[in-house]
Image 1 (cartoon, rainbow, N blue to C red):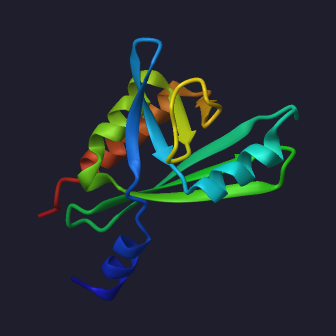
Image 2 (cartoon, rainbow, N blue to C red):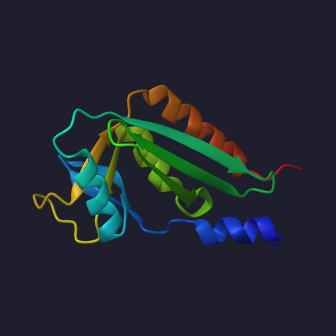
Length: 141
C-alpha cells in the first residue's frame, strides 16, 4: 500500500450509519458532539441552505474515496467528510434512494434535536455520482 493510500485511509470518517425516519432508512454521518453542537449553534434560527458536493477520488485499482463537502450558507461553516466507498457503498445507495443526508451527534435519538437533515436538491447528480463510484470500484485492467 502506498503512502497516499495510507494517508487517505487515516482521514476516513468511519462513523456513518443510517437512521429510520418516516418509514425510510436515511444515510447518516455521526459527528463528534462538540462539532455537531458547533454546527447547530451557527445555523439555528437563520435562513439556511446547505451546498453539498461529492468529490470522488479513485486510483484505478478499485479503491474509491468520496469527500462529502457541506457548505452552510449564512454561517461561514464548511465541513469535509471523507468516506471509503469500498466499505460503505450502501451509504451512497441510500443517499440515491432518499436524496436526504442526516448529520447527528453520537447521542442521537429521534426527538432530541440531535439530528440535522439535509435535502439534496438534485437527485440526478447523486445517481451520476453513484455510477462513478461503482465504476471506480472495478479495477482497471
